Structure formats: C-alpha cells, structure tokens
Length: 468
Image 1 (cartoon, rainbow, N blue to C red):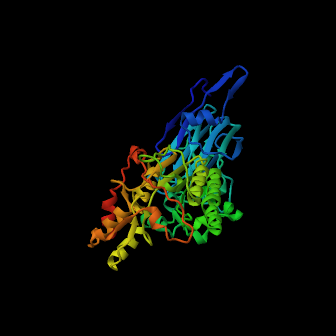
Image 2: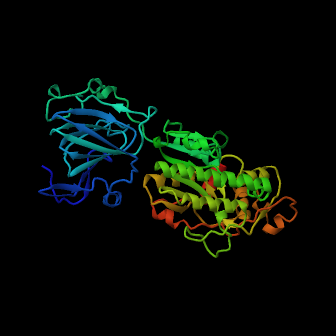
C-alpha cells in the first residue's frame, strides 16, 4: 500500500552513495500524484546532481518477475510508477565495499539513487508493476559493464519468492558468481600537459595506474573538433589541465600571441565544454600574471584581475571560462619550480660555473614547488572543497628574485654576495627582443587554502630539499 504524505528525504545505506528516498505522494479517492523527479528540491535534500539524459520504463505483467543483477558505468534514479518491487543492490565497484548488499521494498512513495558500478536487481511483488529509471548516460557497446548471478551464495540475497518459482531470463541465469565478477573500475583522471614541470610531478605522485591517463601537450589537440568525442567522457571524473603556453616574452610577438591564445584560451574552452557536458571536475592552473602587481599587500582570490601583458591576459580569460564549469578548481600559482629548466636550476648552474649574475630585486613573491601544487590538487579533490579559485604557492616570507638567487648560492656552498640585485628596468634595458611586463608584487594570500585544512610547506625548506 502506497504511503501518502511523507516528506522528501534521503537516507544513506550500507553501500556508499546508494541513497533511499522517501517521496511525497498526494492521493485521494481518485488516485495519487507525485513529483517523481524534481531536480531543485531533490538536490537541496541531498541527492547528487547527476544530470540524467534518458528515462526508461520496464513493465512487468506477473508477480515474481525477476531481473538483474546488472552494474553499469552510469548513475540511476530508480522508482516505481505502479505496483511494488523487492529491490536488491550489490556493490560491484573496485574497493573495500565490493560485494556489499542492500535490499528494500520500493513502491510509488519510495525511490533509490544507484551510483555507477552498483549492481541493480528487483523482483515484482504485484502484477502490472511499472519500474522506471533515469540514467545519466546513453547505452554504449564500448562501456564497461559487470554482472552478478541472482543466486550467488556469497551475497545471499533473501528473495521473497524463491528463484526456482519465478520468471528469469536465460541471460540473467548465466551471470557469474561473485568470485568471477569483473569489478567496475573507478572513474579516471586525465592529466593534460603530462610532460611539463607539473605534469611530471603529477605522474610521480599518481603513478601509472590505469585510473590515470597522461596526455603530453603534443599528443592531444584541443583545437581539433574531434577532441570533444575522442573519449568516453563518462568514464572520467576529473581533468587536470597542467598544460599552458608560458613563454611570457614570446607571447608579446605576433606569432607568440596567436600561440598563447590558442593554447591558453581556445584549448581551455574545449576542456571546459567537455567538463560541463559530462559532469567532470576541471582543475586548472592559473598564474599571478593575472594581476598588475600594484597592490599593497597579498592578493586574495576575490581581487579583480588586471593583467599587464598577453600571457596574463590569456590566463585571465581562461580563468573566466573555467569558472563557468559547475565543478571546478582554479589554482593560482607563482614562480613554479619543478623538474626541468627553471630559475633555481639556472642560478645553481651559474654559481657552480663561477658566474656572478645580475638578478631582479624589485619583483616580490614566493616560489611554488610542484609538490605543493600536487598536494593542493589532491587535497581539494579529496575533501570536495567548494568550487572556485584557490591561491596555491609554497609558504613562508616573500622574497625578491635576487634574494632567492642569493639563497640558492648559499645553499649550494657559494658566496651569496656574488648575486647583484638590479631593477627590472635595468635588467631588460639592453634587450632588443619584446619583453613582457611583469607584476612587481606576486604575493598570493594563502588563507583560503588553509581554511580547507591544507597548510603549504615552507618555501626555503622546499628549496633546501630541492637543491639537495
């Protein structure tokens, strides 16, 4: 008997992500009415915003019709339009809850949200039962599916009507036992720009698990319209964009300007479109160059952008694009140091070769070691921090480039007084090539990141470890 007048609510089950819903049903002598799917109310009540794209209905004539156990790589919202079912759900995802079982009766006043990879099955308890489900992906022959036998002894589902007495398809009868089931793998992460400083650090941290796809900048063409359909995007939950055109001075030339906009803006727009259409979290790396450096004090995430040059303009434009993606993190960094050619390695090499450099002393900021960016990415994703911009640099007292160079000399056993500080104007005075304007103040406030539970490492401690 359908229960009328319940308040909309969701309850967690023993299977992570599997949610039972109590639905308000309004009825009288004429029949009943319910809102079977109401996105705004249901999200407010705790349902994930899973973005359904298709609605299916399975009609069952007889009591005891039994179907399942099927696990697909998409989410389902399961309800009953008429009749009543006994539902059984088995976690067929890789992980510690593989094989966990939950059962419940579902009538028109109840529904259940079934996350990707959880096996779904049911047995009708009334004739003329209409079983309805919304899904957030279209069926595909290329998708990864998993199945479990309805009579598996390990999960031991207590069917109300013995399986020997009910209608079951030959295909369902042939499904494997739990020991032979192929688990549904977790969703994947795509790292774009895998051969850059940050990309290499991400690979070092994440490893070569099939869960991670690494795409070098020259192996993926974001400007190609075919990129939008180049993967089964529903198999991904995160894209980390570690690729960028970073030649700030060359960006001031005609060819460099075109390349910078193509890579930093057009390419990012393609990633944003994919992420928006498929519910993917987009992690994007931004820059202190979106500011003009004129502020007295550290820049916060709320400060208005005022880029001085082409590179900064492209990064600011990309930030605006990424901010439209429902699930996004924009990580603002400064003075990135990782594997490969960079300022610290250059200074160490000059010190070793006996060269006394002139280094700019009127630009102030902090180094950002790639390990700190990786740690921030992992942290923000793991705690599901609110979407938005997060300043991410290494911590400690801000220094000028000249002061950092002096630290490099000292740490590597050389006389730090060999470093001569000069103004930005003096440093570039003899240059005949285009020179991009630099922000004088690149200090980023780190309190927002700290409020999520992550404190960045000390810049000088990182520098010592890096040079060791």
